[in-house]
Image (tube, rainbow, N blue to C red; front, top):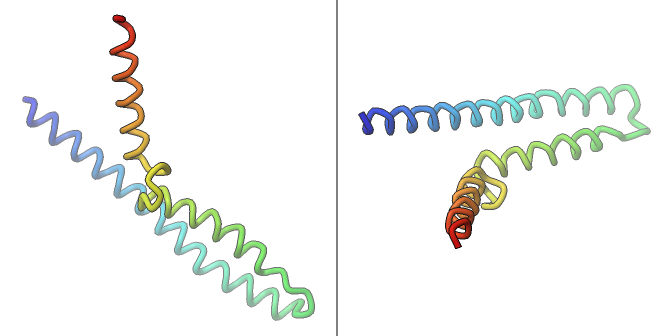
Length: 99
């Protein structure tokens, strides 16, 4: 039965990972479609006042941090770091309770 539980956990982790990836790629696709539209609108209707870089910069920053979280680019922003830290804290709590 334990092997079956392990398989279920692996499946759930893989399913969660796929959900994270789909979310990121959806976010990226939206950015790639919308930003050129905003550039066109800006340059066509008000070429003397350039503003498209503000949403491009803001949204791009959000997209960057989304990528950092999904692809674990910076270790302490990812789930692995969270899991490791939770286990570490739980282990400390377990060891200090009985002292």
